[in-house]
Figure (tube, rainbow, N blue to C red):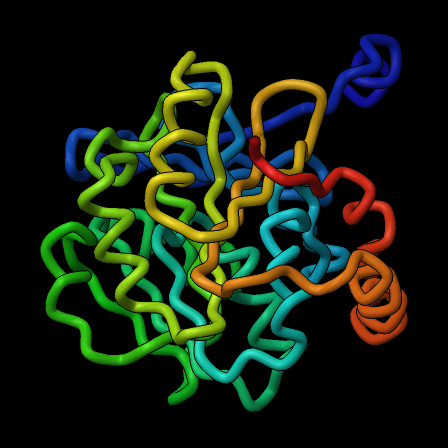
Length: 257
């Protein structure tokens, strides 16, 4: 088997676990030193390195952190969509004083994150099993950063892309807070999403996380963006502090026009 594996040049994978909930087949696959969360197809929803458990393997997950350029020490973070919990786990480790709220309606996703992806469990992380469109209007807390990463098997649900939902998220932000949203350009509605964001937020930025697929949108109600030199200096500080190449990601950041 090892010889065949070497000759084929491909990693062997095996299905570790599977469960169906909310009409979605949630799977955990293992390839050598990594685990992948999938929703019944070959699209990687989350990737976990068993050797480097705090590494953000997928590029989009790193780009989702660009909001740190504007809020380097967030006190409260709202995560919409859990997946394997890569971003939650990373931020929980890097920001020991930050409190996190996670909203995820799929119980199988929650179980997978806890059993196979080392999701932290302590009093700094509040996990709400709920429909995000129903619970967001009931939240009274304001957040420094909101990370919108709710996905089904083939893209984000329609309900989280609507203007009414984004307006509700805007109401959950502090006056200087930022929303980062993972958009999937393969569904063909990316330009429409940009227009919705522009109608909702005073400032809207974008950063392409890979050649095709993931573009991160960032929105805020701040009246004016800092000078770009400030971004560059902050990126250098974040590089050193968190060992992520914020300077490289900054080069992809531009205004949505």
